[in-house]
Amino acid sequence: MAGVIARRARKQRAFRWTVLLVLGVFFLLPLVAMVEFSTRDSSTWPALFNWPELSERYPALAEGITSSLLQAALTALLMLVLLVPTAVWGRLRLPRLRRLVEFLCLLPLTIPAIVLVVGLAPVYAWVTYFFGGSSLTLVFAYTILVLPYAYRAIDAGLSAIDVKTLAEAARSLGASWATVMWRVVLPNIRSAVLSAAFLTVALVLGEFTIASLLNRTNLQVAINFLGKSSATMSVAVSLTALLLAFVLLLLLSLLGERRRSGSAVAAVATAAPAGPATAVASKEPAA
Amino acid sequence: MTGVAVHLNGLRRTFGTVHALDNLDLAIEPGEFIALLGPSGCGKTTALRVLAGLEDADSGQVLVGGQDVTALPASRRDMGMVFQAYSLFPHLTALANVSFGLSLRGRSKSLKRAKEMLDLVGIAQFSDRYPHQLSGGQQQRVALARALAIEPSVLLLDEPLSALDAKVRVQLRDEIRRIQTEVGTTTLFVTHDQEEALAVADRVGVMRSGKLEQLAAPADIYLTPATPFVAEFVGLSNRLPGTVTGNEVEVLGTRLPLLSPASSASVTALVRPESVQVTPETDGNGRVLTTSFLGPISKVTVTVGDVLVVAQVATDRLGSLAPGTPVRVTLQPVPVAIA
Image 1 (cartoon, rainbow over the protein chains, first blue to last red):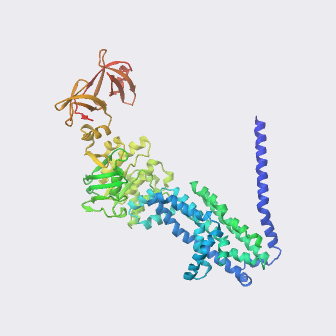
Image 2: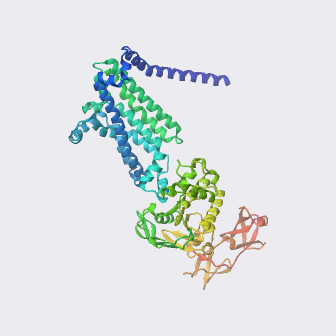
Image 3: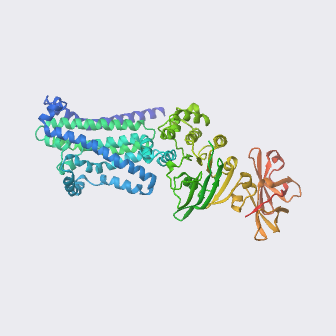
């Protein structure tokens, strides 16, 4: 009997290692290739981490990096300002509308980016009219694009606490609504808010389709453009962006582990894989 | 700290077709401890939430200390509240939870006062613990301390004990009464547990369908219920057939005074188990059906003809009342209500 169990355990172990190995090769091989390719020109990596030189040699890339970082920060901010109060208010006052809000927030996930752009193009004619053609105007489109992930994360965070009772307790102790949000709700959904922000940043850093089709600049558009003139540099930047997204997601899952409640983590974990990895990976052919 | 008077005048509140509050009037004396008792959905929690400002009444008036607070938001009503669900802020320690309301008021000595309050509720030693490190009973003690720390004009307790286990519930219930007596804050306590309500309150209000059926001292509620609903809801009652003659009713051969006049001759009288006496007798009118051991007092179910009668007996008498024993059932001549 014991022999059967030991044999089965050995088999399972062997199976696990095989899966891990195959998947490891599948995922790592392109990365190794990227490292190998980007190091063929020895001046590539030093230039990437020397901002003055980078912005002089590759002005379009430097502009792309700055716009993407700004877009990421502003999108995260706008998303939080819009979504957190809405989600909290929905839970407190309009619980019946929650399904509708959830549906609306998940909608961008079901619409392909290309279709989204077709709809966004005429809207952006007006956006350009009012706000000019700056690449930062993409923030509006991105805020909608990140809603599915951000909403899931924040909603899961709110599910883990009894928002209604906590808010009522704080109200009865004399807290204004602003105080309730700032001192009671936010500290208790802090990791959910961070998750939403990280996912937003990762997603925005990897976005290509909308920016390209609306003729705006961001990191991915710049990488694509650079691929035509300096292939090694474009691969180096792709790799860096990929690693940055990887680090963000790693931080996110570490945050998730620290949470006492498991519900938020599960939602974030399911939302994460659709993020920047695919977007960045799709840039590789361009390099 | 001395209490203030609270008046709820003609409160109405409907949810769809349900009248949660149906022209409710309630006057609470300064420093009084009132318990609102009733089945679920009777409007007792709605009444408390309207008083707290967490729910708006469709019409009616809320007066606290003579001032009309009907239009004031919850944050400006100056009421301490303890909820049924655990409501401590999870990210704050017990001490920080208690000083939360004080810090909003910009009190300089909020920490000192918070410590005093934790001491008052008997868990000063846990002041640095977070809510998830505290048991349910301890959490509710902290919640009570937090509610009292702001020196509220009214203390509102919304079924604060219903999530706790039986022993802690009784302990904390008595503690709440002790603390309330000590600080003298006018208190409204909502519960569906009649024992709880009868044990702690100065007066108990029994509610039904958004209305107050009776508001009286616990003993009066139990002994002289104003309506059949109160008689049936509070305590156990035998429903026994009886015949009315004048202002008395004859039940199982005993004449009992009526609490309220009857409209017909043949009625159902509500007789408390403790006024039923059961004595073993070979040619008695009844026979023991079952017995249940309930600690110092036990319950005996007897059949008299085709009527079931529940009696309460001292447990040491159970030995002579085994199932099947012929017994004589008599009733004490205390006033009874009719259904």
